[in-house]
Length: 322
Image (cartoon, rainbow, N blue to C red; front, side, top):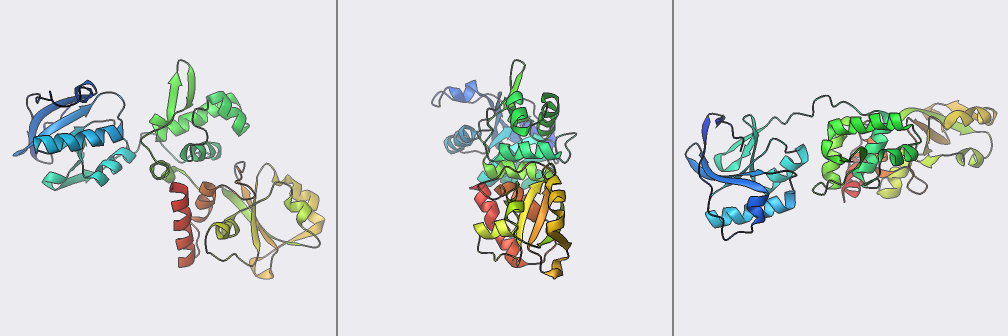
């Protein structure tokens, strides 16, 4: 067990292994368990072996604390950000390192949890992959299968996998040379979104207000989907704008030139028919509108100072995380 000698000035001491004869054998098969102390407070240290199964671990800690009448401290350098968040919510003590820990029985909390080295904002296609990881729709898909779904080369898709792995290594599994999207069983959609969100950005590369000289239906049938405030108003009580917002992707919007003589680019105050957003990755539509996560990302940093929009976005986020 890799215990620090001290934490925030408190000496850490490791003692003998407790008698766990009356507890399930998997407690000791999957964990190194020892008695010890932090400062003057007696406690039990639990160091998981291999993959951390959070529900099982939380249940075990509860039973050990009740049986031994002392706090248990999880000791692991492989705890992820979402795992420590869950443990804090459960009030369970943990030590990641001498300066990253949560010891509620001592009133100590130092959560300087560093991001994985090298992680940076995801490229558009890696972001699209992350969205499918969060909503669980591509779990089990191999690199070659994801390449087909993205419409990208295998080499490019391997790079997207590497980008994802820098943010959350557990989500990329391997079997021999095969790599695939693994299911992170202990992570909810809310936890995955929280982990990935700092690396996700708005998919909107540009936007333009348009006014049509005649029917706009032919134009809108060319790969346009409800987006922005229009899509948000479909899911919440928020009222739509006076125009309808649509999105298309940057590879599809070339058809704009074909309709140039049938519409005018106008300003927001010129009573436009539509606001067209040009997205920097292919749109994975949910029916006739953009997907929920991309919609959230396209609006969450909106400059509008409107509490109704904030409330609607909160409703959308709850929908994503449910």
